[in-house]
Length: 135
Image 1: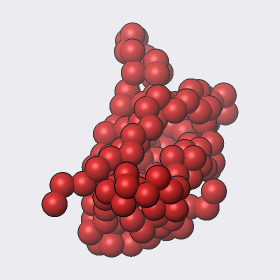
Image 2: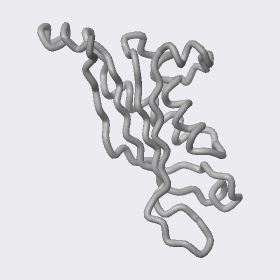
Image 3: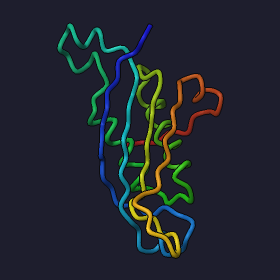
Image 4: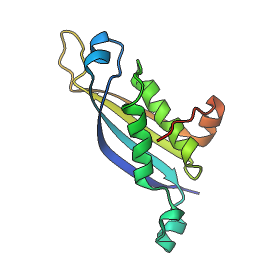
């Protein structure tokens, strides 16, 4: 069975993630895309919010992670977002998370963005265990 997707693109936040002390002290913008895979057939027929996952709730998971505790790696931020989605939304069966750091501080280089793109299924999440992220 193929799953449907709820997609949030271009969510912008200000966070304090990175390995360099300057990134932790000054912060910088982050852009996040999220795709949550789930069955939307019932919601498509019923037109009721309770038959789907609210994109507002998905947004709050992302905001909590990106504006929350500093992390060294984009990989860790993306994984924390995926775990938060699975912890809070049992209907979601898979999630793709893209975390982008515009203009990363790479000495002597001009780089438009650094980005991590992960895809996790609910089975992956069970394998690594859950860490609750509250909104």
